Length: 132
Image 1: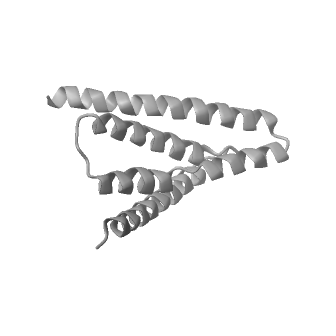
Image 2: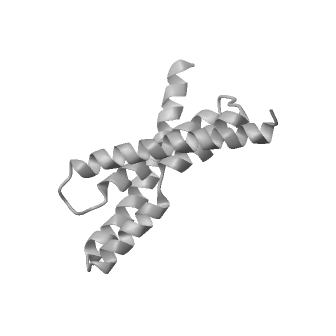
Image 3: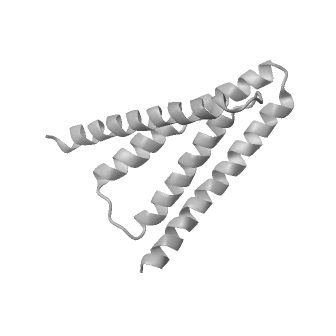
């Protein structure tokens, strides 16, 4: 099988797993919160950035195949995170006159996402120093 066809296949599989994971996790969170705020999307995007940071830290010390990189980063993380939902929900809050909630969503998503990315990188480095 051609390497490019294999990579496309792994993006497809990873993206499907990521999208199903996003759907399940965000749906679970929405079902268990009563505040009209997109906590599910916020959690999913923060977790995606944490996983990306964790993986990024491991890349510096382990040699992953390009197929796995494509599967995980482009496929799974790309399918799991959801910029479109984040922006759409923020716009809906603005249209509903919820300026403070929409601003909180923008701030929380960017701050928590950045922190999650840094924490993921830190965790990978901590794990690596522990197993050396």
